[in-house]
Length: 463
Ligand code: UTP
View (tube, rainbow, N blue to C red):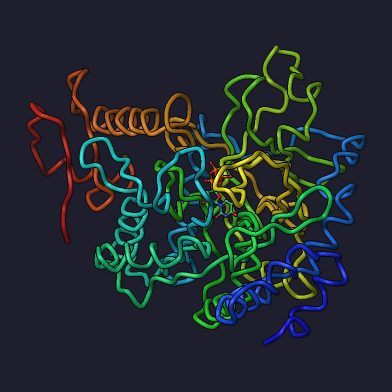
């Protein structure tokens, strides 16, 4: 191979520094760089760079914003009745093998600073189970409870794909039939400087970043898994992110509301803790349900209060969704429909002498919640933060392993107390998904058992 073979596009876009580097490489390294570059969508990244002024543009915020209609947490007998009906509709979907669960785990997890895939982070308070184990055990329990073949899909990135598969294999897929666990990798996009230069990560690779959690909806199609799921008869995809250990995988109540609204994309939200909480907000924008990132929402709306002095736009994004698969297919039918956002970051770039220097870069990515306004029908449901949302983002402080562990202990303590078992205040509790998926199941099972709560409590039943 010689320089003439190198993608012409690099020349067209003036990437002479990469071509010069390439010309100095030994043939085997040239091939590696060539193959790596050929696998990246350079046309797309240069187009996004050109359009950057429009990408992620907040100008649409001059249009009409209103609170959305949201299914509330039930507090009346009617509300409880609607929830019970939704639960039974959702359970029927699971029993009929129409639901798959997707966990997106392709992120880089920079803030947590765990040098392995984020899902391998040990998080549970007593047994130190990993995030992946907690999710996989829920799927295993659902499959057993509803005699369902519910597939588990894990989206990885090129950077953590092999490690993720090896982790599941070494734990025997946490008891799920391995033929029903699917791994697929999201796309990568070259990272680019504001001046439009590509960068080298090392001798044989361009610097690139995963294309965002929205990339899951593209990679499902490009990997062939979308067609495979549809062929299996799956119609609804439960979606969540790897960093929330409280997530209720394939919650039947949520699935039921989604199905009865004939929604294409549904979302769970929690009340924002304060006007300053940095969370995406679920609103109606020009009559269409939408999630706006806090940075795009604008201080005036973020701080707006209603007549009772409560936060007007209270619905904070949990990143928990159900997507109809025909809708996901439509998003891919004429090129990928989600818009790309540009994140400006400063990174440390290694120089030839081994030292690093800060450099500004742009990373382009898509967000899964941008699917919401593209759906013909949507559904949004409020849930209690203490029961369903405690993401692990940072090493310490807010949204860290410590806050997630505390939230799990508090939740499971609550479940036990509602089942009539009082838990001494310093006792740590953890209830395995293999024993009970929710407080109702726990109460039912504890009718037949007596517990000793002298030590940290861990309850598990192996089937
Ligand atoms: P975050 O935006 O919190 O990113 O992703 P992160 O990678 O976990 O952490 P930082 O920002 O590097 O510290 C939210 C969820 O979306 C997934 C992540 O794995 C996490 O579950 N994600 C994010 C992807 O799967 N792919 C991406 O390209 C980005």
